[in-house]
Length: 112
Length: 114
Image 1 (spheres, one colour):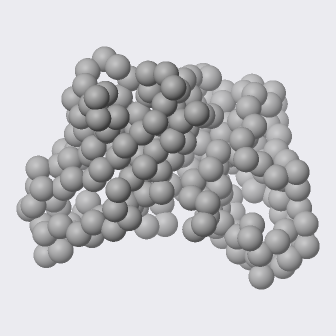
Image 2 (cartoon, chains in turn cyan, red; image 1 turned 90 degrees about the vertical axis):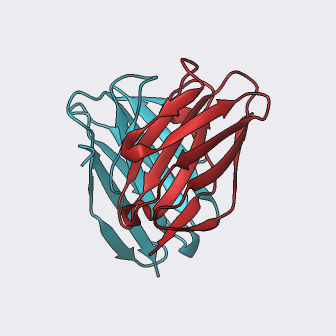
């Protein structure tokens, strides 16, 4: 158990809908990262937050957004969902900006 | 720009045999290199990481990897495979050591045959 908690574990939704994925980082970790794992794109970095502020953006679509709250949990919002958004979404957390990150078990999103 | 190539999307070994998973990287600066393992329905677990302290890095579960700059490689090995090693393995590179700039390889699925 990495100490990073993601909910829900599985999510099935229809095209065009909006979903929110939640991540609770390890106790004391200030940095949260979101990754997408899909069959065609592999593992890709989406976005990073550090102590509530956005710090880096990767290959994140404009339909996707994220935030980190004062209690340091983070949410990834995915809207206008398409079939191609079906993937495993991972959250990771680290103590500081350049320290080792620990990954959660992921949320498997299926868009039908 | 950084990139990772994992040779062989599927590797099968017999229990007790040597495990060798190949990873080659490209980086414009001295890289940080990582191996992660993903068991079915699980998240990514860090096996080991190279941060320039020593070229031979020992990780968890008996795995180790050797950084070879001349070959731009960071292959993962284990002397004797165990059934519990069956999983998917990802090599990753970062130019800063930060998870925000981790570039992952496409993964190698390891099957261990009895």
